[in-house]
Image 1 (cartoon, helix red, strand yellow):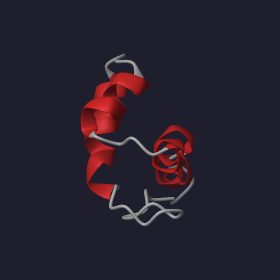
Image 2 (cartoon, rainbow, N blue to C red):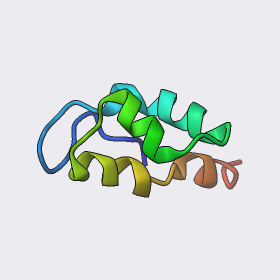
Image 3 (tube, rainbow, N blue to C red):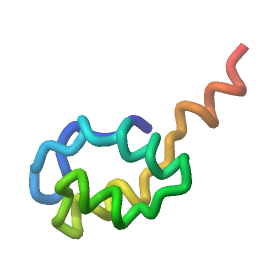
Length: 64
């Protein structure tokens, strides 16, 4: 699954922050601090980032 362009609950555009979030949390930075610095304050938007699993990487390994 690809990160949605907008939050499914409130409609705020959040898709442009995904790459930065993924890069910074991959380096070991605290997800809370990353979301705060990106300006994502609503709990619905934060939960979208915290619970997202990139299935394209997992499913891609099974393609021929």
